[in-house]
Image (cartoon, rainbow over all chains, first blue to last red; front, side, top):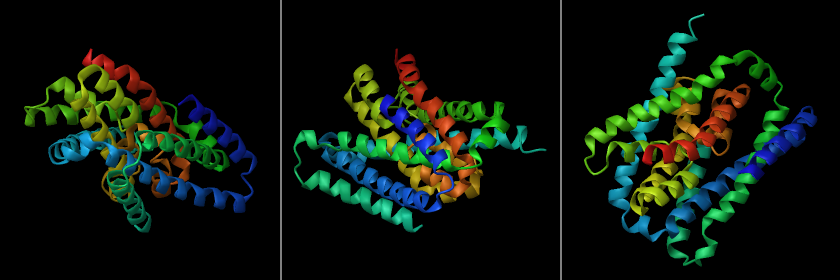
Length: 90
Length: 199
C-alpha cells in the first residue's frame, strides 16, 4: 500500500499544479469513472474464481450480508448521532 | 443512478467471467485490482490537489476530523455485537474481527484466515466486499437518510480510495480531505485491531 500512498501524494501535487486546467481535470474525472468500473469487474473475477465462496455462496453470503448490514448501519447511526448533537447545533 | 447500473453490470460480468472463463490461478483479479487501485489513487490525488476547498477544510475541521473514524469504530463494534446475539454459529470476537476490516477486504480476510481459519476468512472477504459494494451502490440513499457524513462512515477504510469518487460526487468535493483522512486512519488500524481482537 506504500506505493498507493506515494501515488496519492504525487497526484495531489500534480492536481494542485493543474488546478486551473479544467479540460485536463475533466479527462481525469472520466478516467476515474473508468477505473471504478474496471475495479468492480476485477472484484467480480476474484469472487467468481474462488470456488469456496461460490459453492458456499448461499450460507456464507447471507451471513456476510447480514453482519455487514449491522456493522454499516451501526457505523452510520453512531456517526450521525455524534455529528447531529455535537457539531451541527451552531 | 446510471453509474450504479454500470457498476453492477461490471461486477456481475466479472463474477461470470471468474466462474466460467477457467482462468489460471495467477490470473486471479487480485493483482490486476491492485494496479487499477494505484491508478485510482493517483487520480483521486489529482482530484484532491485540484480542489480549491481542500486546504480550507483541513484548516477548519481539527477535532471533527478524528471523530469520523472514531464513530465508525464504535458503530461497527456496536452493530456486530448486536449481530452476534442473533447468530449462534459465530462468537463475539469472530463478529468483531469481521467488522474490523472496515471494508478493507483484501488485508482483513488474509489476516483473519491466518489467525482464525479459512471459513471466517471467506466471511470476512465477502462481508467487507459487501460493505464496499453497499457504499458504492447506496451512497445517494445514505446521504438522504444519514446526512453528508453517512457515506464516509459506511465506506470505512474504503472511503480513501475505492468509494471516494462516488462519495465526493454526492456530498461534494470539499469533503475529500475528511473522507481520505477517515479511510486512512481506519486502513492503518486494520492490521492492528484484527489480530488484537482474535489474539
